[in-house]
Image 1: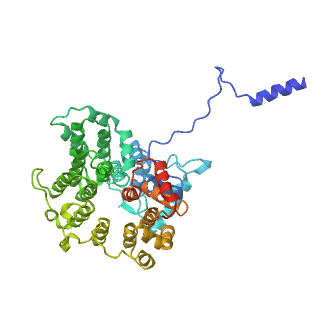
Image 2 (image 1 turned 60 degrees about the horizontal axis):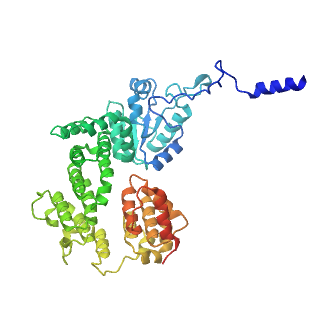
Image 3 (image 1 turned 45 degrees about the vertical axis):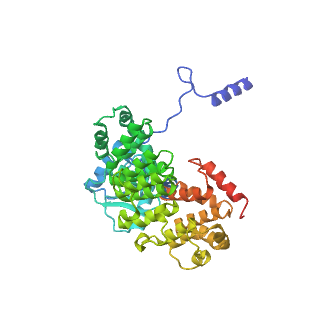
Length: 488
């Protein structure tokens, strides 16, 4: 009997407890995440994630528990679905010095789903950054790289879900686009079905002006779901009324048309017109990049008409027809495009004002000058401002980079400015100097950075000669192919 008893006991211990219906008892489920804000528990990890994923950071100082606004925020607003949805694209921290886990509780009673060590550590970090003289409540939004984008002390109702979503559009366009696609499906689908008549664009503009901080991102989701030209044209026109904080989402959406203007020239022109209407600087950004890449002179004429604000049937404008503070950008772009308007042997100094170095680089690239190239080694070894160092690295040819290779590598590994490190990586890619995997890693990281990705991509494409698209594995392969043989 002993062996049988032992077997029965062993089976009792090793067999799952059976429910009444003969099935295994269900495993206990993890408690659902709260509907409100999801607070990060570790400051260092959260800030690293913000940089890696290109997310803005929210610090909510909620440190006084005997004050009405603090308690209203903690018990109502921060727990609400509206605040929770508005902050899903953020990395969020709440700052409070107290302990709310009495009696061995496993989570904080003031901030559901959080732990008190997390909000105390967040307060410690915040006071080290901003000083001990705290005002509570207050809200601070940081860019993904840590710079302050917005700060509001006290609580007057200004900081609310719509503002948080608008800053998400400004600071993290890709994240904003994704969030809009998740939470606004009905509105997006309705724009895809609504007849294209005289009410269509006003209807879109009403949404854009409704105070919804992700409205522009929502319209862009509808644009991506639309395939008929009239609907796409109407949506792009309506986006001229995009609120200022949401304009970066438009730049993100227009980038492909601007970088490849010959694929769909009519839509490229439509985007440039929209960006000029929504934000002048963004229009200049789009126009210059399109001009450089347009092979057809008549298409460049059309872009310059948009830039100058002249009718479509007017004579092609010249650089003098543009606003004085924008002529240098146009001149540089037309040089790179080898356009007839930039072929004059002598041009007014005003056409170069503020961008002399960039124009000199453009002239060299267009074989318009035989001036002595910049001594890169000298620039890198002196106390040169980071902006000049960066421009010099991007302008240098392969021979100049190889000659100053040690100094360039030093900038890649030790420059305080991230933009200088990226420029050094691009220079080394151009000169086929791999430096282990540091060049590829630096460029891949920059491509995913919402602040640096656009320009890094454009610079890398000039070196690689072909576009790997969004596939990071393909980027890695192409860069590896260029670097594999070393300097040639």
